[in-house]
Image 1 (cartoon, rainbow, N blue to C red):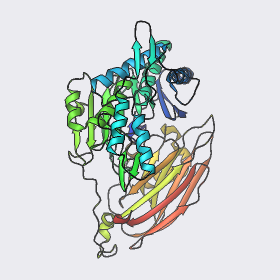
Image 2 (cartoon, rainbow, N blue to C red):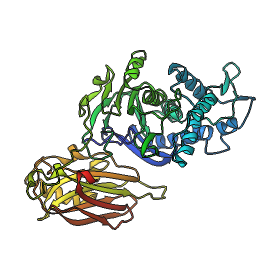
Image 3 (tube, rainbow, N blue to C red):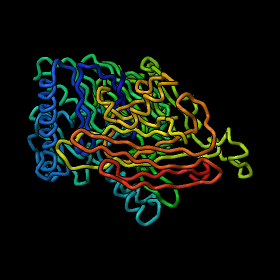
Image 4 (cartoon, helix red, strand yellow):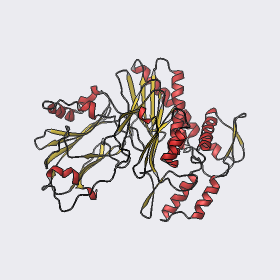
Length: 509
């Protein structure tokens, strides 16, 4: 069986096969996001020691790099002026790496982008685009020297007073240092996979399958392009199609081109495979800024780097080596991402075989955030049964190891009943990894698990969630597919905070 970890270009899916000898750990609130750790070792006790060392090293590095804590090393340095401050080896290496990518990208990568973020936030508050004069002033501030690094004395001098941000490389850098420390200090651990907020690196020869999802629809159960990241490699992604600013009816990315002062417009997502997480992290941002063709040219000058970029118009740009990682393609060279709008004269009853072409069936739900040191992500199943209570379609199956599958007792019972007439293994073909707390969106295309289009009529949707050291919850509601739209809201519970089910014309959802 394969289990899939969730990654994201913004919210993509990262998948990794887990054998019986691999141990997985999930944590929330690590560097402000989710963490997934996979350890390949002999026993649970050894895996637990690896987990403890991983968390300890993250805490140590966070005390160096967190800008939210005024007591950290970087916070103290940011508050200094024109003083040669002795810095830790980690601070020295981070600034060396940042300087390298600022120079290699010819300014597309910049730690001074908070100047632009602040400017555009103020502009959005007054519902106006920043003026050319404001842009020029911001760029002038950004182009001055911000620090002086003396590598011989290991001292760093803060030269400017403008805000700086190293987030576009710091998370990847921390992943690299944590994994390298674990490799050095742990005996008996053969492979490590560390994923923090979608930046991932493999230490050792374990492979990871990564599902690159469609960047436009935001649906969590759509077909994805599967690539395989080999051992001793890293992957990261960047994109601004969801986050950003809305000004005068137009959306602007939160990623800025430090060369022009404007938000990135031509690129919606960039995924990069490189040797280190710091490099893949920085390059994902750089490629989002410079765009597809320029990124492909740059990749040719970088050893062991490959990328896949999707432009605003849906065009896909992939480096020459990308196909060596490709296991299951899902994108055309030109992605068509606009839903066709159905003619208002046609009704569902008159064209029941094509109802899914005209209508969208969408399930939105939120997994609860629970304050508990023993928190384990819930197993979740969302599926549809027909009027006779026969299961017809599993929309999602988020789980860990298959030995715990019977804990999803309602889905498990229904699936065993389904297998009396259809022996398709939905666990191996449908299941993906458990997900962190947050909001999710599923779509149903009106087909059963075998791909057959179902007729209008009465159905039931069920949402089941169970969690180790948590509770068991089952939500269920009846609905009817007809020529009338509907919206249903289900009462939340401990594990699933809210659920809405929408059935509407595609032009109105």
